[in-house]
Length: 388
Image (tube, rainbow, N blue to C red; front, side, top):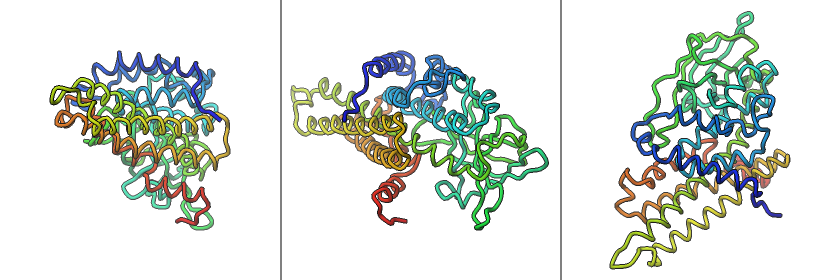
């Protein structure tokens, strides 16, 4: 069975690449230096229809497949990882939970602007002492008449405090189950709600263009109908969302690997030492050959998982494919940036060369949407091993 992209997907890839090279590439170095979140560029991405690729036409989307979204993320990520993750999180963590679990009224209220890319949404799960460990969640939401009252905090939340953020969905304790475990639900908090504060953005190692904030909630009141999905199912909903997100992050990682390959091939053909291009040296050529293997292997794993998603594969099989793709591509991306930086030598250590930016950006790929350790645990469980 082959997972080659269709001619339509390849044509779409070409269109996104043209856009990224024309609208993003000329500015991204300065944006990165300034830690600037480029609202205008994000909204142009929206006007291209990229935020609405998987959304139904009813809400302004194109009703396309998940594979197309991965293609778009890969191509944006090939130019800049921050821009790629803005799309990935905007769809996977912003739009998808509303689309999957929202009421018709919630969809009609929030999705049109999100799908159009003129507004962004985030999802707040992680806390200083809680992320994958839902039992450690400290944020609480209590019903007071017809309103939820939310108190607590979140950290590392993408698209949560930009000028165009419209809503952030957060997980919170809404009670206690019969077995004593916390009841975790998801509640939508509109930006600007009194008591909801997006704190100062993080000073991050990489992803300088990405909008990332800690959030605090002090007696934040929202109507009871801002519950997203079924009460007590918030964490389960988010885990299901993560399976898709891991495939999308794998696509982002493939974009990083491909960028390293492209940059290394070009530089090795132009840079000369002892009168010949460095690409003639086996020590350099073999490392670049390894980059080509990583790109092809990573792309195959990623688009196989995307094809499974589009084909409606059983959740257990999809989870395994998503974790394998995410684990391999994220770790390969970190290796690829190290190799590309080495090919560039001293210049690779200079911020004026893109490989330095990709080197900084790559590490988070092994952490976000589930660490490499979590992926290995999930893969081992999928094999039937009794790992804890």
